[in-house]
Image (cartoon, rainbow, N blue to C red; front, side, top):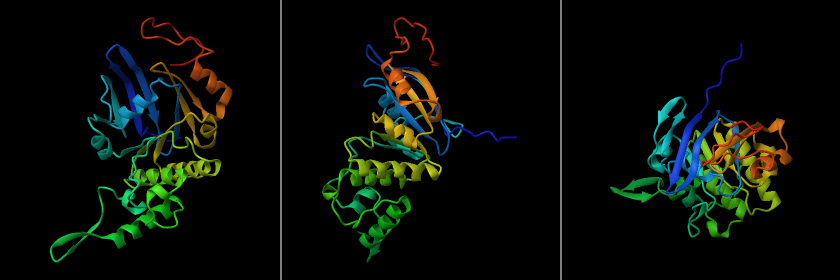
Length: 266
């Protein structure tokens, strides 16, 4: 008898309105431990808003969120972080003038006491940073390098490494391979594989559809604020995903009409 796998995250009936704009309409999402879910859709489809709801940056108007079968409510990103949900934004939020180790430990730097005074323990911070990067397979020659001198791929790896160091259960990545060279893309994708292999649930938001087929187990397609399709990656193709994203093979339900979609499960 196969043991049932409990979802790490279950979002149900999530809705969000900004004035007259319905950004999310009754959206559900689920992801299992160690699963990589590709969340895709055209600009304005609602995928970023949904991810911000899960990361605590946006409070929904309706719906529920469960983490490991426990209902939670996030009012701030700090609430989400306390539930071990981390998000790496496209702008990375790194401090260019600080070195690699400083960025990895920003806001939680190790200290030592000397004559009753708390001082930054730089040796420990750099030693811990090296160990952290090695565990994730991130190659950075010197943790004393300033982030502004790193390549785009290295900067992305540092942002992911910082999020992974918080021991997340869920890691959301917003366009992690955008504007990277081919070799750097593969390094980031390998980092996603490493993180998910440790049991972290990864939600990947990307317009690079080819990346979905290299790291994802499943995809979820959004269209005009609704979840319109889910596919196992082994049972779909780039062509079908494109059709679902642009809406050519179905009539998308609008908030005003509520028309029935044909051939696509909501």
